[in-house]
Image (cartoon, rainbow, N blue to C red; front, side, top):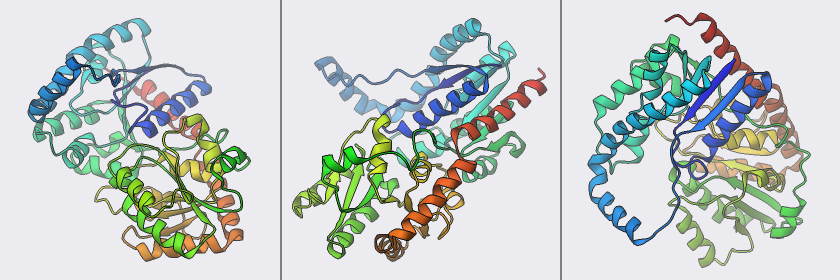
Length: 397
């Protein structure tokens, strides 16, 4: 089967890195099954050049972006219709997979015109994200909802990454029979317990230390407030503990850096900055305990790739019991869970792992087995492939 995949992420290797890697791994898994997959990243990425002309445009954008965001996004459909028409005419696919993006309907329109079945990758409720995380933009709510539901109801099928995401879409008016759930996964060839992290241990002086790790951008939704409190308490209680924090960006990073400098903790809290994805596995390998302390968000629709990778690497996971994480991590079986608002529970779980290396090894091994049995990208690709084949087989226009 020939598949064309359209993706509209605006920041592929920054804030959207998890979604980017998911798309790459999933499409690779479909290719390895035997499908001919063509990936098209549709949105031009920022060049980060700051000449005078760019600065002028930035000032103008500052004044008008509040009201121009939605109209501009709507108008990009014209550009995508032109580009995607040419791609589809050249590739002649049996199926199109298109990532759901606010106000975009180009793939749906062209698939109807060209009589090609369409599957929507409904990883995130973009309309909800824009409203809650970008309040600086004025949103035409009814139009955004109409276009989102149009895509999901008119496509042959849509695949969500979590049950929470599926429930959200159905509550907003999408036919539940049009929606399936396939969670994210891990590359079990790249992330496994036999990876050697000695180079990272040596680089940061982690020898004979209990290394507590975190991977991600430093945003509010990654639980950085909890992380900061946990650092304060843990370092006082356990002189041999160190924190290895891998990632860059996010509004909370500055406060974290200030605290580390103020308390003179540079030798006990390592901020690595940007790390290439290819080197992520050796950084996880250098960790003894890993953290996924997400806060109590009202709609936790995520399926965090990093948690799958933590577990694939056989690490002892301390996580909050929320959304899809609560289905993946089973308390005291393959990790330790606590309520997102229970900071004392976070401390207790972390202390339990610090003081019990045998328990870390035991639960880490079970975490590895969980990913191997149910959550490799190969298994996710097979689940996607089954739906793709059924959609193509049943397609009638």
